[in-house]
Image (cartoon, rainbow, N blue to C red):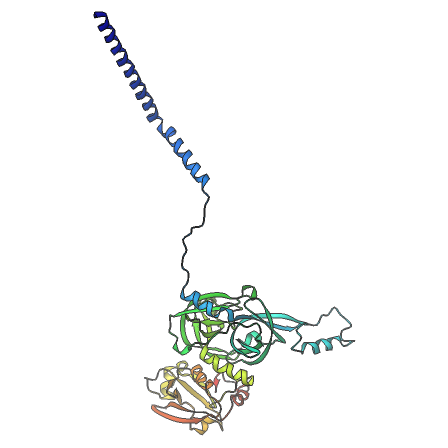
Length: 433
């Protein structure tokens, strides 16, 4: 019995020692892992991460973003009506053929070139943009800039889908820089509509569409705002004289003739020019975001006349004029004698004989401030009002003679071409109308 007790005691001590050894072993191993955890623990985690990355490839998210906006909707309405206009001109006669003149080849080439229905001997001279605004029976009508088609012996219109159509030039107007081209309506599916440019607000969205740098960039879209309205633009080198829409939407060479549209997709102007640099006494200054478009209301008036007559006939007052703002305050006081409250208007510097202005009693140094109750602040304003009239119409002119405000009714009986002939011999740098 006593031996069994000893045996049991010995067994308990053995188990206790064994258990202590095991526990001690774990403590040693645990300490080792803790001491080297920075190396051992991450190994397993890195392996898991690597397997995860290798098993999943990068994919496009299935979350869809609604990109419809006023601009995208506006562009969709008119983009199909925007075209590229290619100005085709005769090739220069090659000097490599010494027999051309002898056998009359040069004469034959000139004769072929004069045939507007055969463009085979013509080459591309320049490109611009345009917009289809009317479809009537077998024909459709494109408005573009006069400087886009100037000097052309043939015209080609490139549709939105790349289709090329021969174009016929119906008429041009250098003063407003507009032209109308007629094409076959066979491939025409979309036509643009004109909005009211008189209702424009400074700061509202403006979108330009066209072919900057040529048809390889056809239907390029740029957006901005209306920076200003009724901005006078007078280019003495081209004769262009308009009251323009100013925009900061990017306009580049090739955009000329393309539409400027509003948020509703209506054409509110025809893009015409931009200011890229301006000169100072010491250097040239680069300019950004100053583009100009011919207002749609003026465009509609002009293209209707070009469709019907191929030209624009404008009435004239028979005066030479300068802006009041260009006259010094001393001259205003000593020569004109107008009240100091009169800040803007048009000063008559000369009245041509036997003209509507003379017959109505207007005189040199009269200052015109209104036409038909519309404020006149510059010569461009006055011309713009007259361009909406026809020969035979009458207007009411409000003017200052000295410090007295007076009115006169003027019958517009002559064409402006009469004055243009006189203007060519006039040495003064003045506007006339």
